[in-house]
Image (cartoon, rainbow, N blue to C red; front, side, top):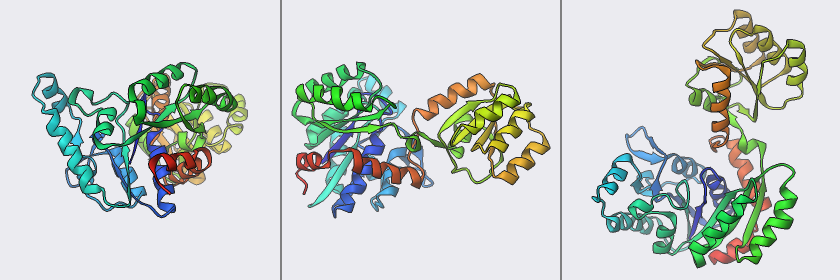
Length: 355
């Protein structure tokens, strides 16, 4: 049994869990995903609350189990309030998790447990990742979104807290130009401190991308033109706040980018369409000209209109890009490729007792 956790939120747990799950299946194992504590609830058509990660991984792993069973405890505001008032039976909640696990597990099946946002979340109700892992006998694989040396202390502190529960750590989303440093300096140091480094994954533009539909949803924008579809992936954003001559050169150097520009800048909008950018995000609730919409439709470029100004829109998009999801098949395929190519699968299989 494998528990995929992290010290900080948005480290890439779902990507690693998905990639490993697909690899286990490829090697002939029966695999099921479970998220004991639902921290990102979404309402299903049936009216039931299920964690977003559960739905994504259950679909990718072709699971047939009832989703509420896979996500037994909802970490709702009501549950947190009752905990603060001393009205939560922690043992009852843990039993609920245990019962769900027993119902999902069977001989020969690999159960992958998905952690909460971070290692300690859920402790107020007795359901933090370490508490659940200890109760169920799971090994914890930490995923760390490595950006600088300050993360090393967090990993070492987690090692001290987890002890033998820790299977190892995966250093994820290594910035460009830092991969050699992570492999040649950071990984050996962590190994010397008793932390097995089971993978080093570079930042990947496909996994870091978000779809046009996600952009519209996050910004509460109005889709004026769908273009080639709301599942079109955007890897970066450009700000259209320059003269049109400069904009054309700027845009043509970009790959898989969208432009954030005022709704009244028809010249920049047409330049972005001409340069082949993936989408237009028009700010200030200013509708574009008819000419812009016709050109966008002809070239298949989605157009989204948002109420906020350009600065606020860019800030919100930066936040969204930092927690991109695995909704698109292209991302799921890429996650599987990275896990197979960047993780030490031999050590992971040995640590879990798999062949």
